[in-house]
Image: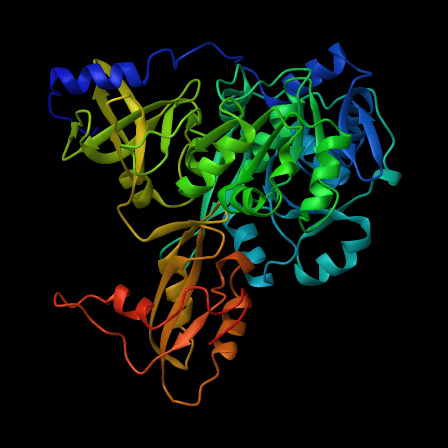
Length: 533
């Protein structure tokens, strides 16, 4: 247990105010139970809108029951993990529900990821069964030999009335997401059913009820999908699947308008692009949630002028705390704030700012620590990392289990958190959390690379993009060859669009790589995305 020094009266009062009202009651039930309760209460209501049509709660429940029975026939048991290798579709939602009905944890993955990465995730979780579209069964079986592939196809499923007998419990693991790891190995983050329920029940940051129409836009492997899917289905609302693989703003506007979407989440980069290029895309949306990277005040000021003060909500949260931890309704931009606040804790989440073993006073910068039922039980198979990142401490007379986010923030005089950067080299690009050290690890493993340095630079959309610098073993090396090496190991979002070869890495007076000097040699807007120099 971590010991915190006795806080000052000002620090204690500030944190009490920050967390006031954050603890509320929520159902001590599983995702399975809550969804089935909605299906029983509103069987004819539209649960899912997908490219092929609509599914009512009764139909979606029955189809998931049928797939759950097939999964049980394939040997899936409560406590197992199943990989879900299905793109955004009705089959994806059915598969996630079927896993919940079996009492299994789902492991969302992307078919575009390299085979080695998929095999690593399966091995780390002990998963032996993979759910995929029927048309992809043979290909997936060839890519992942030794695993049982269960086909999922809407036309091959028949609604069953009976659900599997296992009812599920709040502490069951619902899913496992993998985040980037600085040692070159991704870290598995299991999330309990109660974490999901706490995220969407009586939400402070958006209206989630039977009238909610929520757009599902994020990849299933990105934890924003947790909010998009279960925020609709556990509240009796409607989940609308964006029908294309790639986002086109004209298409997005038509989907939002046609289906009367009331709530959606956008990564910071996509939000900025919409504000720049087609702000009328979001004209019909009631609540626009956005986050994943630090916000551009210029874009936010424009958005406030266009959308008004009661429609934009900035959200923040690590995967380890089940998607969202804090929220900030954007009503005005204060001239004395150099960055947009990340706000106050959402329901059933508590936040603390700690520096050198004590709670910070207003205006003082420290590390953000989070508490509440949204916390993961800990990384898979990493006891030393867990001991460092998940700690216990006595705060204001209450013993709290805390997650050390590595994010720095200060408590403003207005009583909310303001992000102040990272304690390490972790970054977020388009909402995906990336350890720069993981990319550097695999760069350094290439036989043509003697030294490397990975960092970020501003892009034209007001966000950040990756850039890598490498010292090759010979002057005639091709940077595209090195990028190809990374593409064979890492997901596409972790492969720098630019790798610059240089004779040496300049150092500062303290012997560290001089990031500023390296970036000065590269015009941040000179190369298109996907290019190498």
